[in-house]
Structure formats: structure tokens, C-alpha cells
View 1 (cartoon, rainbow, N blue to C red):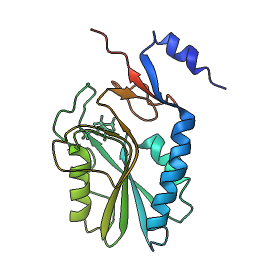
View 2: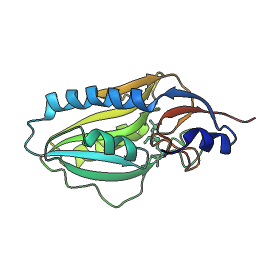
View 3: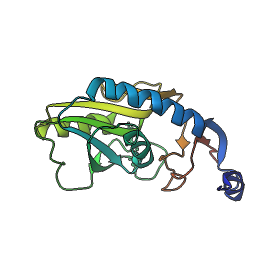
View 4: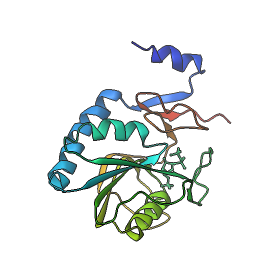
Length: 187
Ligand code: PRP
């Protein structure tokens, strides 16, 4: 058993409060994965695309709730570059897209914020020849998007606060917290 309370105290309480517990996340994933399977479970070739790095934990747990022979791919993309706000520029860090020609694709990400990342990835995958692309996110911020983009499946809607844990980071850290928490912003 890992002592996460001690970890957080040791980090001088970087977490202002826990927003979504591990138990709440996993229970919701059971429901959403079943919804994805109801829609796509009979797809001949289903590709799950994880957007690195934030989607790592989410995809690990979601994909294990999808009992079909899906293919897992990753796209390495970044827009925050470590800070508290989106830079507005979506950078694809790998050359090329995975082979999705003629396939049904579900893009999974940790959070939909401005929408710029998901919008850019969906466009690239369609341009790469996917038959159809869906999007599934752990979190969706209730806010106006910079582009028109909403996810097909949202596990949790949250207010516009900076959150970390369960894949989400601040300056590269805290992705391994098992829950989603609000980051304590120091002035
Ligand atoms: C974060 C997050 C999403 C994206 C959402 O990625 O993981 O991919 O930003 O923001 P948006 O809707 O405003 O585009 P980040 O660039 O921080 O990279 P990371 O996944 O490696 O943390």
C-alpha cells in the first residue's frame, strides 16, 4: 500500500483538494468503457489512440475494460509545454501518424480544455485515412473552447481549475497520483 497522504504532505501539500477519488474514477470508467463497447465492440478493426503523455493512465485502465482485440497506438503531442495555460500551439512530437487507414479509431485523452489538441489530432487522423474517429476523455472543462470540439464520451465534467493526477501533470510531475486533485497555486 503506497502512502499517498505522506507523499502529498512531503510535497508540501501541492494538492489543495481531491476532486475525484480513485474509486470514483474507476467506477465511472466501468460505465464509459461499456458505452464505448456498445457502440464499437463489433468493429472489425478498432484502434485506440492514446495522446501522450497525459492519457497514459486513463488508456491503461480504459483499454482493460474493453474486451475486444483492439490495437493500441500512441500519438505524442504537446500544447502546454509545462505551464499552467495552453500555449495555443499543438506540436506533434513524432513524425507521422499511426496506420489508421480504413479503421475505426477512438482517441483517448486525459482532458479537453481549449479543445485545440483533440481538434488537431482528429483532423490528422481523418487525413491519415481513418474510416471514422471518436473521442473519449477523462475530464472536460466547462468552458468555451478555442475551436469547435466536444468529446463523444466524457467521464467527468469539471470547472476551469488546474488539476493534476491520474495522468495529468504540472511541470511533468504528479501524473502518478491515483486521483484527480486541484493544484494549490502559490502566488
Ligand atoms: C494536455 C492534455 C491534453 C491537452 C488538453 O497535454 O494532456 O492533451 O493538454 O488541452 P487543450 O484542450 O487546451 O489542447 P500537454 O500539452 O500538457 O501534454 P502532456 O499530455 O504530455 O501533459
